[in-house]
Length: 286
Image 1 (cartoon, helix red, strand yellow):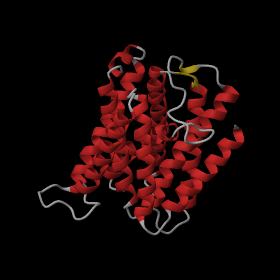
Image 2: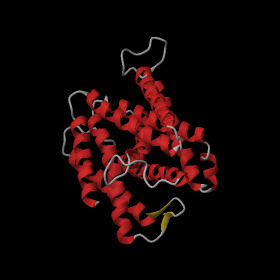
Image 3: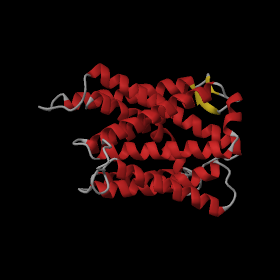
């Protein structure tokens, strides 16, 4: 199982890097679109849609919504002449995403009482549409920025660093459960270890770019604070998916990735961190 997991991780990392650093941003966005389509299919299972035609319909609605976002934001064709400002539209959508994850934090704190809110299939489907569409908008905006490839890679690596740090620190030192009713394997020691590893990565970036004539990184204290926030939010995304899987009796969101489960199992932390980061990115004007 470990070899499958490592092999799958290497292939995914290679595909991600090749598409991210392709000269055309469209190549990377098509890769992301395919991943989110699979994620939408898996979400339909977490929403307990039983019939395949219902699940396909949810995927089609998700795809249509992502297409509408790309059009309204001016990334497909020309921007609308109806007076819609693309930056304002994206900022509003990202604000919805930030509020969404604050609400999911409240759901986590009040679990298992909050499980009643998630019992309705329609509620879970709506949450899925928000989660997927906001993650898509975040990727669209970030990739087309001047240093977009760097910032996409930064968010992905921070989430991965937090996950890896949490795993090893949890194994070595973990004793106090972080959210025992949701994910018994997660500990406070692992959570703090994930924050530490992500901070170390951020410091390495600062040290590297401090030798460059022009650095596009923000001030050190701001950068470390944002990094810590992203690492923490990625854990929230992981725990939120765990709540949904626990509610419908699933161990993994899917089985398409050998040794890892489903696409959502790999993206749960990233889809939470992305809108939070891009919202800060736009507000700060980075």
